[in-house]
Amino acid sequence: MKTALFASLSLFLLLPSCGNSGVAGTWVLDTSVMKKKMQESMNRAQAKNPKQNAMAKMFMKQMLASLDKMKVQMVLHGDGTFTVTSSTPKSKAPQEGKGTWKLEKDILTLTPKSGNAFGAKLEPKKFRYDGSTLVPEDDSKAKEAGMVFRKQ
Image: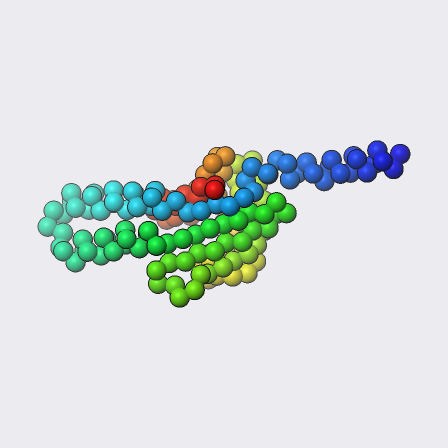
């Protein structure tokens, strides 16, 4: 009787994590998508204003180059916690954050508990999960910029 109860309880406790096991792991920001979006934006601006000054062109080239040096990594642990580390060319040290995550259908919610990797506000962030990518769901600027995370 105790063995059957223990087996049933174990199965019950494991089921939720089985459904989320695909999303657990290491995710990295795919800067190539962001570069493509930025290049498209530059091309549209150039088409609208062919006399775009050299300073604006240089600034955009610097922005594209800085994306190569930007690194963002999220690790979604199987226990429902996550860590995120980000660094940019201007940051003196990597920024880190920790919190919890949950997956409901195809929406992943990250709830930061500490750190500054998500900016000054520790507000939940939502991502659409399609099995291979995470795309911001509630941040139109990040979505427009082409922010996409891919599983490693």
